Image 1 (cartoon, rainbow, N blue to C red):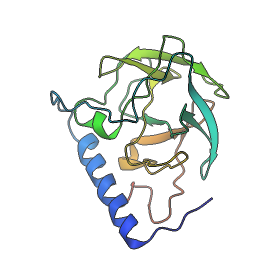
Image 2 (cartoon, helix red, strand yellow):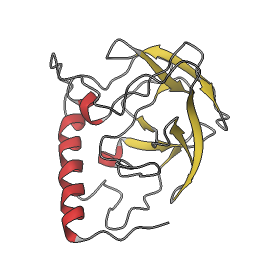
Image 3 (cartoon, rainbow, N blue to C red):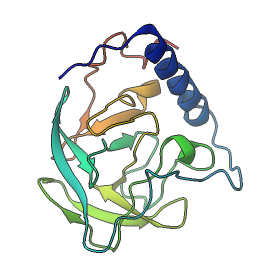
Image 4 (spheres, one colour):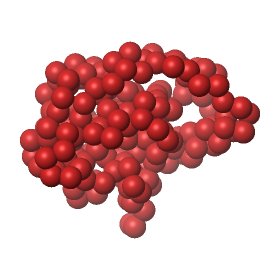
Amino acid sequence: MRRKHGPRLTVVAVATTLVAATACAGPEEESPGTAGTGGTGTADPVGAVALTTADSDLGEIVVDGQGMTVYYFTNDEPGSGESSCTGECLAMWPPVHADGEEPQVEGVTAEVGTITGSDGELQVTVDDRPVYLYAGDSAPGDVAGQGVNDVWWVVAPDGTEITEISTPGLGEDGGGY
């Protein structure tokens, strides 16, 4: 289902995306005290589903237990056991947390596990890649982080990156900046 947004929302979305691009596109910087996750990256209650699937404009995608879209960061090295998103990046791209080393999943066919994330908490991995949420997604099913700087991609249930851009007005360069 597509929603029509007025100019005001578009300006806010572009500004938010620009902030995210600035925080995560350049050289990595460590900023003590800036790794807050807000309310979206908190650990799931014990026994809660960490990942499931949902339908979106991009097809079937992986979402967290609250229905928020899950993303890969292409700067992460699969199987390294580390997240490349540190410092200010974590404010815009909070990790998907797990309540244990074997997160519960529904509908995800890829291998799911955990690493110790940059914030010191258990972070969910899909096919040995850390996964994240996007602070610019305001409701379940939003995919506003799709394609930002050509390094942030929605995750498919089989663990592949979805690289299609379906957001009206955004090109393959994540918004033309």
